[in-house]
Length: 131
Picture 1: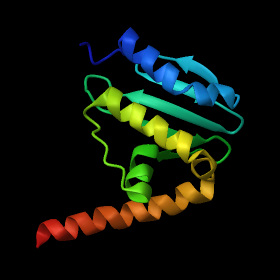
Picture 2: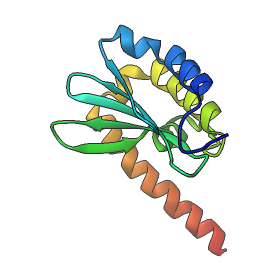
Picture 3: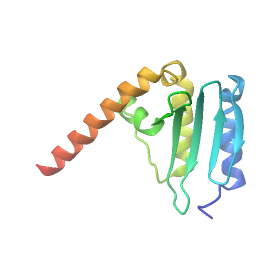
């Protein structure tokens, strides 16, 4: 599979799984390595890294120009175990997380607080590896 460009079957599966964002008024924009859902003040950006099999979903707060990783938020908030190198499965799992936690994830305060939890999680991981 060409990692640079999403395969058509991947795009179809992602689009179907993200239908709920269309229902909430987001406009879908498809690029070579991203699918963006553009909303009023908030964008969700599904990224498939070029030359890699890694994926994530980012949430961007337009006015504040702040971006947060939904993958990391799901990890620290719900203990969601993601496999970033299984790019399609990862995105589908994160879309499910967004659907189930939509009212929380679109809160900038929730994302900012998650950032603090992410930093603590990473610090704890580093400390545990030193021991």
